[in-house]
Image 1: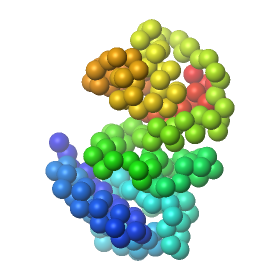
Image 2: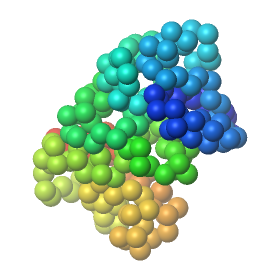
Image 3: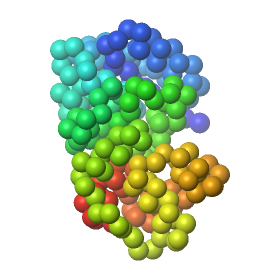
Image 4: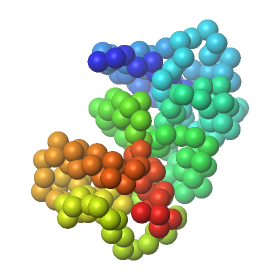
Length: 210
């Protein structure tokens, strides 16, 4: 498994320490930069290995995460940014995604789920906390009934669960399927609908484009 270079921007020393200690112990994650502010990150970036993924807090002192996002994407166009925050209001979610975030996770996300979320984004997917996905849908007021062509009956059920904002484990419980089976169905849905991941699927569903 190829190692992923990871950067962390978090002002809370307790959260920063917890995340950095846990993530640095993952064999396939290489923590190349840990910063307390966006300004520090941008200043130290030239001397560090370019990160594949940046975990970015929004509520930073000085330059906010939302202000930093377009600057990070400009400096690192191939780097994915996962926002990690306590904020789940639609305006911040929309701004973060529109400014280039590949994921939006709440700080209540269990540590054990973080490595997989990072890997998923680095592999071209996206990651959203379930409650964030539901707020995205509510904000854009998606069409209540959608039946994309080409999906099998089971894939249609998985699609509807994704649109409902369910995580893979919740889909498994709803449909009484194994988790690996759900992963396969989700990948098939993404492939057939020509979307890169949850964020694009939710955005296009919200606009009636599926």
